[in-house]
Length: 238
Image (cartoon, rainbow, N blue to C red):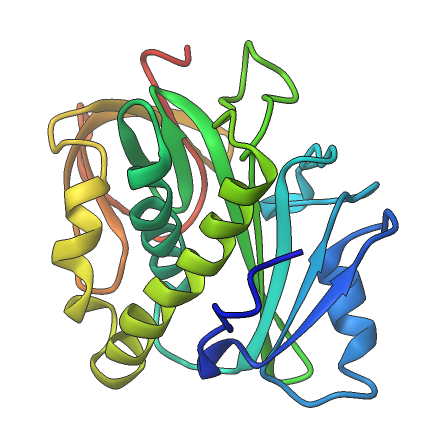
């Protein structure tokens, strides 16, 4: 699958490759935790039931990258934003176009989602699931595809862990504030108009800033509100 001369950094742990289609790398990682201690990485060629935040289905045809990294739990805020930063930093050199992060953790390529991630706490461990459309877009009207060949795809996979090996320890030691300047380089520009829902009520406003904890401040007609979780939609997507 990969160049044996380019081993994963120690932070990744053992690499477990699954060739046949599986339901989800997150579910497989949960099952693997019964027999193996972290860190380790489950990587699959395809998934039949891949999912993201809020249980949203993630289409996972062959040619994309789908993996779950299992590591030790941290109480530091906003680990999902850190993972999105690692993805954005990784795919930018391999992408033809503009790479941005739509808070909190969707990675966009030319305005369309190209990668999603999910961080779950299971059995006192973090299960970090990542999907990247490294080949074709599963739904061109909604998602972007990077159009990479197999060799380039696995280069992206290994580059992700190289970036993680630099960014994650900094985050663990000093919190999200230590990587916020790097996140802001990829974040949607301040002043971008977005819409979100809070308890079913829509709020539209301009992004003011992202805090040291990873929350997003939004200027609306009702004043400035702080979002700790949820989804946002840009005017381009409406």
